[in-house]
Image (cartoon, rainbow, N blue to C red; front, side, top):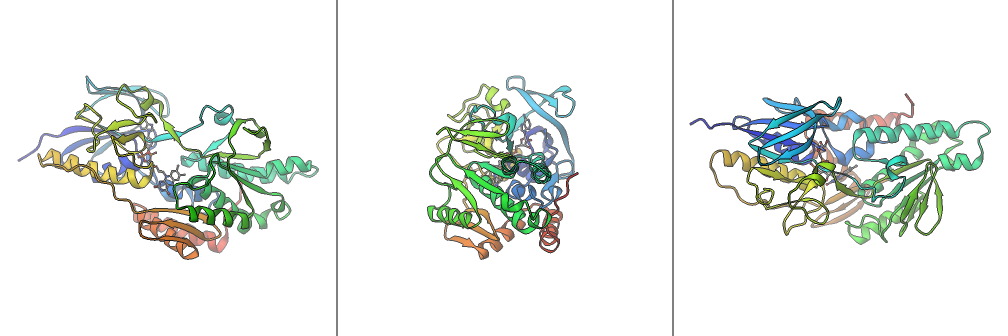
Length: 411
Ligand SMILES: Cc1cc2nc3c(=O)[nH]c(=O)nc-3n(C[C@H](O)[C@H](O)[C@H](O)COP(=O)(O)OP(=O)(O)OC[C@H]3O[C@@H](n4cnc5c(N)ncnc54)[C@H](O)[C@@H]3O)c2cc1C
């Protein structure tokens, strides 16, 4: 028997939506993906691209060729009319507007970097969420070294340009600081031998612990490792204001910087904030354990923009990917009138790179740290990369960086 195909519109091309896309049966649904990003990005390896340990294109997968018989629109969804089952969209490049009808809507638009409304953050800091952010950071690092090399430059100005500050002691901030340290000690030391002794890396954390989702002993180990690497960790340091060349902490101290990476957590996108559906205190859409928006059986939400009522899961790729896989399987089953079970999350643990070929593993059964854990970290992420092409490119990049070093050219 032939099933009548319903039109399934998927918003976003991140971990949750892409996982649904990869596993949905296009014999059962007409699938349309709407996203301002025409590729899937493997964010766990994004910090490595800021310094060239891995090249940008090695960790992305284009959406258009990820699956046959789908339609992709390079656009933002700007409005959802749930009564008429219509969404409004805006092309991400030229702003041209259009609308789309749907039978089933899946919302997986992720979250954006939270500035907490602190003055100057949006204007002067660099986030680390997208490839374009990583590219901007890489460019700025090299530019600062070139500018700091100008003959006759005042010592204070050179120190400022070479002060790299990271705000936020979560895994992303820690991994970026670690990658930057490796870049300095393994590569920039050859290109800029006179500059490297003047470099400072500072990690600012508002709480009293970095990596607070990890085991406390692993967090302490990271701080000690950073001390050895001369990365200064400043706890209980809340940023009050950011200016062009310095930031001001709540205790009144001024910290001059040359590059400021902002990595403090998430807030919801303008689309999610504008929707009239039920939300939790963090403005995430509230769903049941099948990912239905409360009260709507034809609209689903998952990933960083949503939360299951009564089961707060962390905002991680691991959660989003499992949710996406589950939703595809349950939509496939529903189209065949088969029953579906509620979603159950399985936690496999957390990993983080902390520099000098050392990593942390906080797994349900075991805690690991050091060089052997770094080998595990690398192999775990290799297996997590979706396509063989990406796995081969990443192995190639790691080998290239090991043999020839990372490139420090500006172009
Ligand atoms: C640098 C970095 C490192 C990370 N490392 C790890 C890690 O090691 N382990 C881990 O578990 N997690 C990690 N995370 C977190 C993880 O990336 C997120 O939890 C995960 O990506 C969330 O998946 P998602 O599908 O909800 O959102 P995303 O993956 O962010 O995707 C959201 C998608 O929605 C699109 N979108 C946005 N607005 C709209 C709109 N209006 N209309 C249509 N589409 C829209 C975006 O372009 C994007 O394609 C990391 C995150 C970052 C930034």
